[in-house]
View 1 (cartoon, rainbow, N blue to C red):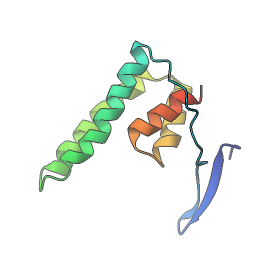
View 2: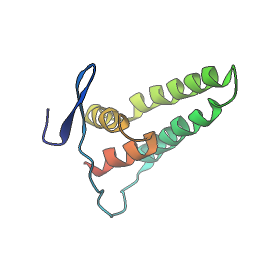
View 3: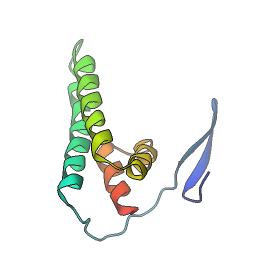
View 4: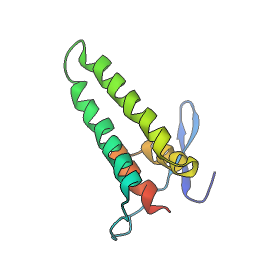
Length: 104
């Protein structure tokens, strides 16, 4: 467990999640690669809206989320992907992506 994480006890054992923090209020430096990553994060969050549709919505939502996540794996560096996965446990994808880029 790093100093940026806290331990939460659950019935399944301890879970390590990022510490809740107030983000720095400075603009993110966006280049083309980061812009693509943010677009995929937005698409992952928007896919959850499709899940509301009865019967097929959940299936379509899962396919859309998996497709965009596979693109994120190609775009992000290994440290960025690890940080994104940590942040994605406790926040929507777009917030997790913003926090990932703020950590650098």
